[in-house]
Amino acid sequence: MKIAIDDIPKGISDFELTCEAKELDLESEIIRFTGIVTIKLDLFRQDDTVYIKARSSVAVEAECARCLCPIHWILEAASENQYRPLPKIEQHILNDIGIKYYSEGDIDLSEDIHENFLLELPVKVLCSEDCKGLCPHCGQDLNKEKCDCNLEVEGTQTSKFADLIKMLEINGNLEV
Image (cartoon, rainbow, N blue to C red; front, side, top):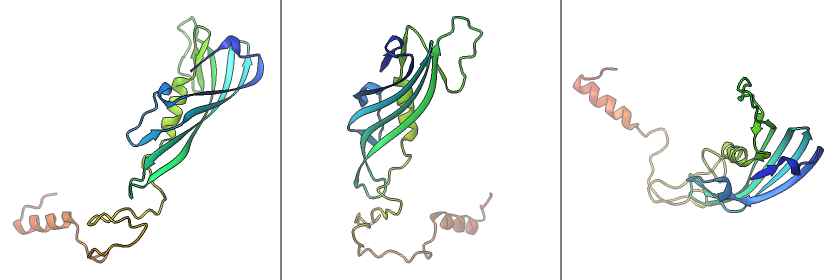
């Protein structure tokens, strides 16, 4: 996803770009990118320096990590960067925060858009914060109805680690 510097007028302008998620190498084990990626750019060009504010969005789907119900939403990402020509002298520091470099008269936004979407991906996808999930015994979706499993009353369950500690104490081998 490249923009030619010569195509950017001096001063303020805006562009809208679209592409397939495959073009930005957007892949995830838990989330499927199902729509077209839309990128809205606000640009300001001053000589060879270009300031770009990008707002990107794409339709995604996944399964809830607790109840396995399908979830659909729009994933959005935003960034602001300054782009300058790649310096010819090696003395310049190329790791300035918020400053990116371009060469050959093109600004390639692919890596920036890709990184922005990855930063917005949730670690765990949930249909809601209070999702009850599935019963570990019968698999019933506890958000829809309760199951008839004989679960121990909360607070009376013993930890498997507690049982292990008791066994080790009995044998006299407990060393921590």
